[in-house]
Image (cartoon, rainbow, N blue to C red; front, side):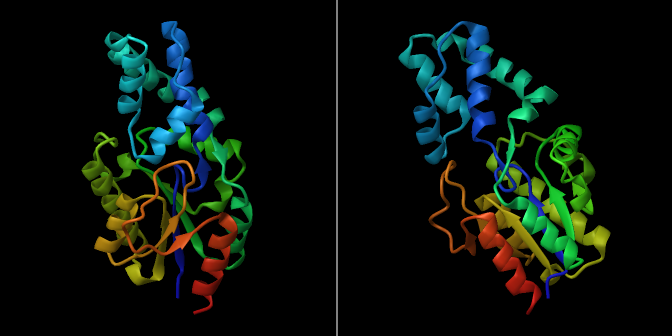
Amino acid sequence: MITLVILDFDDTITDNRLLDFKAFETPCKNLGISPPSVKMISSSRKKGLLARDIMQKHLRKIKKSYLLSDFLSKRDTFLSDSKSMYHLQLKKHIIPVLVLLKRKKIKCILCSARKNKQMVKSFLKYSKIDNYFFTTYFMHDVGFVIDNIVRSNRILIKTSLLKQIIKDEHIDPQRILYVGNSSEDFEAATRLKISFVYMENHYLNKELGLDLNRVDSMFDLKQKIQSLVLK
């Protein structure tokens, strides 16, 4: 029986589409150039392209390739500003999932590969969902800070976070359900023999090559959790 649910943050409980577009638009405005279109960004993200790749292609098209370094610097500045979090949105129907976990007295823990712990905590409080989480785990909580853009690093971060939660909670991994939205999340859970549910994302690239336990919405996730709790 599942007694602990771990939720990933970005693009699992949040919808990052607006934030992602603003992270292209704002730096471009500061540089005095037009940003990539929403359509281009969306189609590129579905192919798994990183911001650097998307902007490199765009700058080449408008013959401003020399601005790539400046763009990336301004993008980092924008995303590091706490005000950027106001462009994040919660996934629809996340509240009923959190209410279910609380009603069933199942611990709910949030984990994230983000470097800025305080920004996420501020977003949870601003969104009035902070009280639903027993605790939160971030990179700093496992004693290191590394580049979370690199795939192998993301796997290391998520595996380390899950290990730390298992240790702190003194819990059998088979009693944990981890909900994430990437192959890195899946790999980390698989290494530790933790049940994993993949939250489909209609904005990012789909992990079609993996045999995943998939849900398409928070409504589906709620049903999945109910079935697992009743086992």
